[in-house]
Length: 391
Ligand SMILES: Nc1ncnc2c1ncn2[C@@H]1O[C@H](COP(=O)(O)OP(=O)(O)OP(=O)(O)O)[C@@H](O)[C@H]1O
Ligand SMILES: [Mg+2]
Image (cartoon, rainbow, N blue to C red; front, side):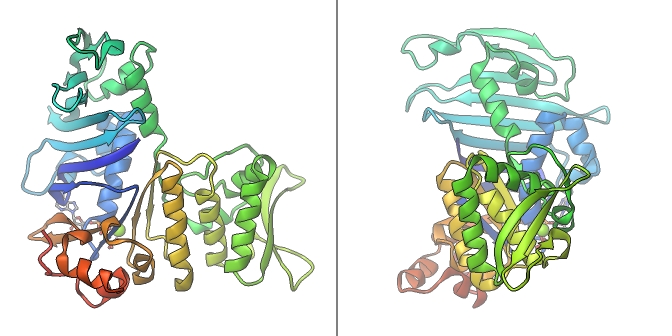
C-alpha cells in the first residue's frame, strides 16, 4: 500500500492541512510546536480508533474539546488516499464528532475509484453506527455492474465499521485495509526501555517502545542470519569498539543483549553501553526487518547519534521504504536533511495558531540551488526554507 495523500481537518493545530503526492519516504521538518508530533499522532489516532474505538482514542488525547482545533467545533476529520497493492486508488475518510458528550463516528467511508472516470464504489459508508457495505465486491471494476449493498447497524457508534465488519471473510477488501492499519508502526522509542533485559520470548518486530530489542535480535539471529550479520557489520563500522552483539539467554529465563568490545575480554550488557550504541542497534534491528511494516513513523531519529552517521541512516530508511514500508520521519537535524531529496521534504509552517504543509520541491529557488549542488540541510540552516515563495 502506498499512501498518496493525507488531509487533516480540525485536528489540533491542523485546522486544514494536506500532504499530497507523498513519496515512499517523507521527511517532516518545522519549528518547535509546528505540528510534527501531532502529524504522527494522527497515525496513532487512526490506529487506536481502529484497534479500540474513537471514544477511547479521543479520551487518551484529553477529550474532544482539547483535540478539536481551537475555535472550531468539528467534526475532526482525516482523509487518507492510498493505492492498494492491486494498483487501485482508494480513499478512507473518518470524521469524528461529539454526541451528547461522547465521541462517535460521524462519517466513515472506504471507497475505491473505478477506472479513470468511473464513479467510486463505496465499500463502506457509515454514519453514527449505521450504514451499508457492498455485497458484490468481486464484481468491482466490471463494466455495467452496479454496486449492491446491505444495511448494517453496529453495536456501538464509536466503533469503526472497518473493525466491526472487517472480521467477516465476505468483506475481503475491508479486512485487508484493516490489517494494514493494524500493522502500522509508530515508534515511541525509549532508550531506557531498550536497555532492560526482556523476558525470553518470541518477537519478530521491534515494539513501539523498543523494549523487546533483545528478542528481535535473537529472532533475526536464528531465522535471518544474513540480516543479523549485516546489522553487526554496520554496527562495527559506525560505533567504534563494537564488534559483536549477541542476545544471550540468562539462567533465570531472560534475554540480555551483550555488546562485545574488541579491547576487552568480557562484553558489556545493554544496561552499560552508551545511549547512541543502544539506539543505533535498535534502529538497525528495526530497519533491517525482513518484513517491513506497511507504514513506519519515527520522530527525530538523530537524537543521541553522531551527526556523520545520519546520511547513511536516511539511506536505510529509504531502503526500508523501497522494500515495502512507507516511511515518515521528523527531524531537526540539518545532517539528516542533507541525505533527503527536496521532494521528500515536507515543511510545516505555523501561522496564527494553525499549520500549513509545504513541500520543499515546490520552491523554485530551492530546486535551483539543489540542482547546482547545494544540500537541503545546508539551505535549511541558512534560513532559505522560510519565505521563499513556497506555495
Ligand atoms: N486543539 C488545538 N488547537 C490548536 N492548536 C493546538 C491544539 N492542541 C495543541 N495545539 C498546538 O500544537 C502544539 C503541539 O505541536 P507538536 O507537538 O506537534 O509540535 P512539534 O512540531 O512536534 O514540536 P517539537 O519540535 O517541539 O517537538 C502545541 O504547542 C499547541 O500550540
Ligand atoms: Mg514534537
